[in-house]
View 1: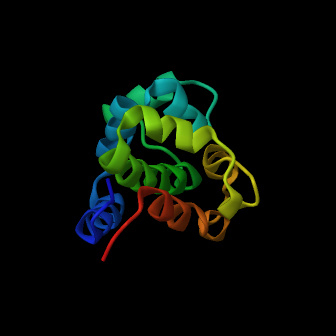
View 2: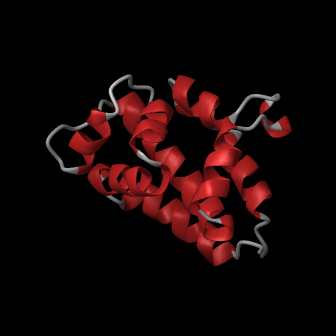
Length: 129
């Protein structure tokens, strides 16, 4: 199933406008707490639940990773479902110099570190105009 451009734009808009608790909650529900913690670059999976329940606010680099993870997860999950999304995140990707998108997300420190992740997800999801 190809991803319609309207869904791509919706994922972009929501990644930027949803509060971080909602972003963390979506990722927790779709990918699981451990996977979300990995993508965010934290060791304690319980932090994800704390973010989702608004008990703790993540630091800015973590927010950056969460918002990007949300955007790619929304696109891939809309096209293929949660299990394929997890597989895509942890598989090597030729568009990311054969790194797994999850690894790129986890190690990103600045926005430029993430520049290839969204286009790779959009390509995988087969977005159409």
